[in-house]
Amino acid sequence: LLDLLARPDSDYVVGLIREERDRALAAAAARAAEVAPGLQVDTVPLAGPPAQAVTESGSGASMLVLGAHGTGALGSIALGSVSWNAAAHASCPVVIVRGETVAVHREIGIGIGDLDASAEPLTFAFEEASLRQAGLIAVHAWHIPLADISRAGSPSPVPDLAATAAEAARRLAGLLDEWRKKYPDVRV
Image (cartoon, rainbow, N blue to C red; front, side):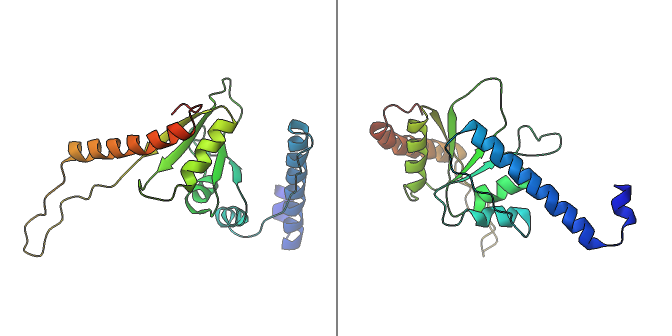
């Protein structure tokens, strides 16, 4: 590090960074070939802000697979910023793979924000769970706005939280029942 700091030539530093990137890509490709012989592995160095570059690299792909490399105290349970951004913005399904664990849970998770949305994410999740003989964990979240002040100055009614939650649970169960019939081998 002191050697790098002593050099005013930024091309030298950029060259070292590129060499390290190329070594890391070659090592990742070799590891993938070792784990899955016969799998075609291509390495492509990306440029630009990491979260944006990785997310855009999934454009046109059938699936974008990323490692969950969060850092800090919650690194082992939280997603890193790149994975988080890709999961939120990629134009294809995103699969986040955590590091090796002692036990294999064989579970696939799907977040369902809109119960009336396209069936594509559910089709993908159920097909992947069936293919991998995995269970499926479906998570549904919604937003209940706080009381707004109407133009007349009085608060608008706040929805009944228990009734709203019960209705969402009923609709989610109905939606998942349709998919359970199509994929009876998938535990939901």
